[in-house]
Amino acid sequence: MNSNTIDAALMAKMFLAGAKNLELKKEWINELNVFPVPDGDTGTNMTLTIQSAADEVKNLEPLTLESVSKAISSGSLRGARGNSGVILSQLFRGCSKIWRNESAITAQNTVRAFQKAVETAYKAVMKPKEGTILTVAKAGSDRAKELVEANPDIEMEDLLKGVIDYMQVVLDQTPDMLPVLKEAGVVDSGGQGLVQIMKGCYNGFLGIEEEEGEAEAAPPVRQYAYRTEFILKNRKHISKEERLGFVSFLEEQGADVAAERCEEGLKVHINSDDPGVVLSKALSFGYLSRIHVINNVERPQYPLHIFEEQELQEAMADPWKDPEEEEADYTMPHKEVGFIAVSIGSGLGDIFRELGADYLIEGGQTMNPSTQDIMDAVEKVNADSVFILPNNKNIILAAEQAQNLIHDKEIIVVPSKTIPQGISALINYLPDKTVRENEALMREEIRQVKTVELTYAVRDTKIDEQTIHAGDIMGVADSGIIAVGTQIEDTAFDSVKCLISEDSELISVYYGHDTKEEDAEALGERLREAFPDLEVEVAAGGQPLYYYIISVE
Image (tube, rainbow, N blue to C red):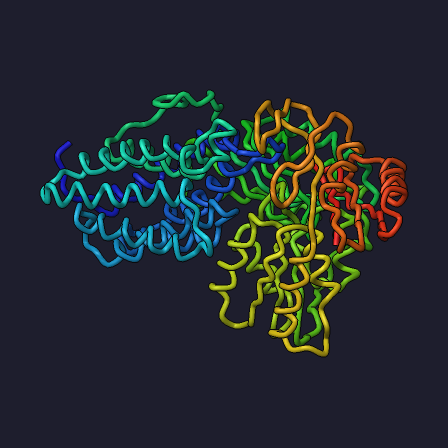
């Protein structure tokens, strides 16, 4: 192919091809997570981020470089999830700032676009690390500049191939830049995601329709025909067994299953071949809203709304439906200061509400909310100033991105990295202080909170000088993995011992939905006996995947 320019139609085609390639490889990228925890999500976060932009690009008419650029930028900014997704959205934003003012994409403005992308992404991260997606992006930008300077008339095909080849070289070197990657035996997952997007874009430029598993040694990933999304509003007393049974049914029907609690019920996402079977099963548990079915093969321009919510409610005579749970029109009374917390688990949600949280965003370690999710939450809080508690280090950037996009309210992001830090921040809020005084106070208080989370290993690895086998119990603290064992409570106890110092006063134990209350109380009593000078509190958290979340203050 001999072409020195790319027009809007080809740009859109390339971007959609990049999004598709990333989606095909996302589980492979998830497995590159340094920590062998059961919720590695870099591939998922990047895929959901780029898919948000891809959905906007597919709906464009007419196609211009300006419209495509703006759709990529706005879609990815609002759909960004996790640190990798936010950085990816900033890379897209930087490129879009250049290309939206051009009549065609050329080698020369590609160099400027890549440079602006790297500049924008680095600015979004307070303490950039080398050996990450940022390093891989910068390598591509630098290589583009070198190639164009050496040959101003370079063909776009040669430029793209040269850039991608060099990005791959630098990606392979990331373990030498970050010791934790070398110890775990993986390259940077975010960098790998970016390379896969670029390779997909290149195939789109060449007109190649990539088949699954082609061009990479990634595990084969089945492409299901439909993506189905909906909110399930179920009865008040649905049992744990029934809920788990529903999730198991979904997993049998397809892949990429997500069933997370939200303010309105259960937010469900699944890729499968038969949306009707999924929706029929869901209807046996309750009534549905916000139903979207998207054809993964044909990718129609607009999501298909199967039913309107009112039609569903009229059509169903559901014995599980509780009339007292009908949503009423409700406007939150105006207040000067409001609070939003990211949390998952009924017990943790109750704790945040009791401490004054006005709105909970369901999610966290197992499902990072998007920038748009956070913006929607802010809109529902009728306050002049809104504090956001991300409660996870992988959500802070998305919260800060939402802060930058909201202009009608004062947004304060308190960078809480764990649930206990968020709880501490709320406890220490003082109504008689100003917003800025409270921000400073809350930031100071969260620095005093040390956290460890107990979960299981999903694969064999060696990290933090510890040999870990699949199924082992791990204590994952702020600094890394601090304890490994075969028994949950023993590993939890060993983890707490690592956090105790002479200044410690309080141990808070939040047990998950897979942990028995009697086991948690026994652990609490064991801690009281071992540390008689410390206060020990035990509470039901209800969080998934993590047997315990424990803090020491």
